[in-house]
Image (spheres, rainbow, N blue to C red):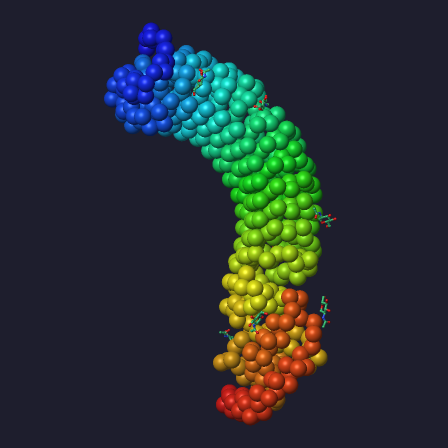
Length: 463
Ligand SMILES: *[C@@H]1O[C@H](CO)[C@@H](O)[C@H](O)[C@H]1NC(C)=O
Ligand SMILES: *[C@@H]1O[C@H](CO)[C@@H](O)[C@H](O)[C@H]1NC(C)=O
Ligand SMILES: *[C@@H]1O[C@H](CO)[C@@H](O)[C@H](O)[C@H]1NC(C)=O
Ligand SMILES: *[C@@H]1O[C@H](CO)[C@@H](O)[C@H](O)[C@H]1NC(C)=O
Ligand SMILES: *[C@@H]1O[C@H](CO)[C@@H](O)[C@H](O)[C@H]1NC(C)=O
Ligand SMILES: *[C@@H]1O[C@H](CO)[C@@H](O)[C@H](O)[C@H]1NC(C)=O
Ligand SMILES: *[C@@H]1O[C@H](CO)[C@@H](O)[C@H](O)[C@H]1NC(C)=O
Ligand SMILES: *[C@@H]1O[C@H](CO)[C@@H](O)[C@H](O)[C@H]1NC(C)=O
Ligand SMILES: *[C@@H]1O[C@H](CO)[C@@H](O)[C@H](O)[C@H]1NC(C)=O
């Protein structure tokens, strides 16, 4: 197993020689190609261990999906030109701290899906001074030594999803050159005030699908370059006021699939570049006025699958928001309080699909809000044209009277003329409809008579 290796001397001569050199010492049953200058492809060939020899010129080695268990000292010999090494989907359970010696130019190391790794020594990667990307996804890691990355100044991308971390590994603290961290699908319970300390170049942080129930105040404050933040599918029910303070470059924030009930108007104050905000699949029933106030770049807002019965227009004041708004799967009470949304549906086409819990079975887009004589909006009543409850008393019961008169006025004020008025402004309508009334009343006395006849005859039949 510890075979003596021929010292590797890379000869830079003619390209034709380089090609020959790559093939010359190609490991048995592997394929060597000139792709990426010299690629050694040994994937899916049932190797129980690392081949004894690789071409000195190797720039990329693929050993995926074999049955490799151990990485001994200098497991790959000396390969000064090696840039990429992939060992994913093996059965590696032991890595000697010096295993990667002799690979001074390695920039990308993939060891994902080796479920028996579990533990890593502090010095496992310390020789990989040029390492940019490290993939340790799905390796059953519970923790890692705090100083494991201190000698990796070039590390930009750290892929650690689908492990067993219960806290954000302390090893990332101070890693000022990290730009991407993948920690989704672990068991992380908190984002502490110092978990992300000094990550000043971090652009992408994925913490989705963990068990986070606490985020300390200002825990993201060092990550001023953060652009994508995934906190969805955790156990958050509250966020501190300054959670996202200073994240002026943030483009996407995903808080979906948590247990948030109230949305504070201070959380998003600094997120002036935010384009997409996910608040879907929470328990939101209350959004403070001005919650989205500074979100001048917002393109999409997901509020679907919450517990919203109404949404005050002031939530969007001042109106910068001109993107898509997702509001389905909420127990909407489609009354005059959200008539402004109805107007948005008509005017901007940015909102659609708002099924009402009351009136049940209706969609907000089908509701024609009517107005009383004095111009105030009238709440819709349950549209039930076919069934009238017969009552033993004389005359119409008062609720039915209201319903009938509402029905009459609805029919008297056809949607066309109404919408023309409704189209005038972005604001919830506050102007009177006296002009509209005139148009509407022209629609006809004839029609009214006809309707009254139907109603009266219907009523007498029921009696
Ligand atoms: C890394 O690779 C370059 C060529 O791409 C080479 O010139 C250099 O010597 C290598 N570095 C080391 C430490 O071998
Ligand atoms: C992988 O390694 C573990 C322990 O090291 C062993 O129990 C298991 O049988 C191995 N699996 C395969 C497919 O070789
Ligand atoms: C970040 O990169 C710079 C330049 O490449 C390097 O000097 C510095 O030591 C690195 N920082 C860390 C913490 O590795
Ligand atoms: C959420 O808002 C409601 C209405 O303002 C308030 O009564 C309640 O206390 C708030 N809950 C929390 C957890 O802030
Ligand atoms: C955000 O809104 C607050 C008022 O709620 C305002 O004082 C502040 O200047 C705004 N910040 C930005 C960056 O626009
Ligand atoms: C929805 O909000 C109401 C209060 O508006 C509350 O009584 C109810 O329990 C909430 N439902 C859920 C599923 O959170
Ligand atoms: C119509 O109203 C009656 C009595 O209020 C009710 O029993 C019936 O279910 C309603 N029908 C529909 C379709 O809502
Ligand atoms: C609403 O206004 C827009 C633009 O001002 C216009 O194109 C559209 O026809 C109007 N809709 C109605 C129903 O009047
Ligand atoms: C309607 O309300 C808006 C803002 O609340 C106001 O600017 C506008 O002048 C009002 N229009 C009328 C006709 O009162």
